[in-house]
Length: 124
Image 1 (cartoon, rainbow, N blue to C red):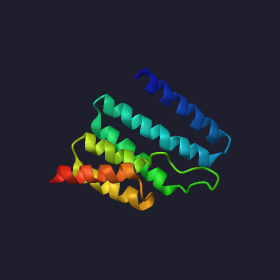
Image 2: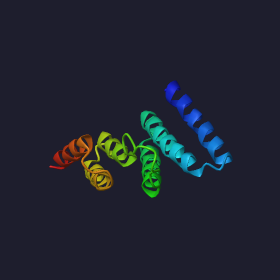
Image 3: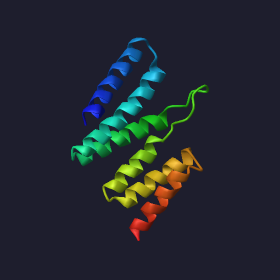
Image 4: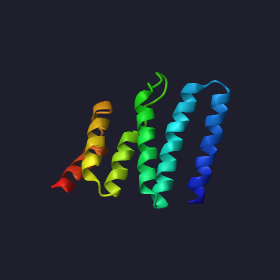
């Protein structure tokens, strides 16, 4: 947990430095990652509703930003992480909705398709 907390603090420093330098795009990208890390920390600490709220905020921020032309897309879209978190919390119906939304934005992701199937199977 110490590594995660240290990573969270480092992301905060990087985000604040980019904001101070008027690098809003990169500050937002760092904030997306910071919120996702904070969500997993909250989940590990048993604060599940806080974890869902943080991950949803991160996913919504990621959805609202355009990808820069010279950068690759997200390695794992945060909306997919939200779906995985919801599966961990035994909320397959909500997870399925998040995977479906994520697949519209980032189609043909094998892991996401697998998780979508997992959520669907848990519903039945």
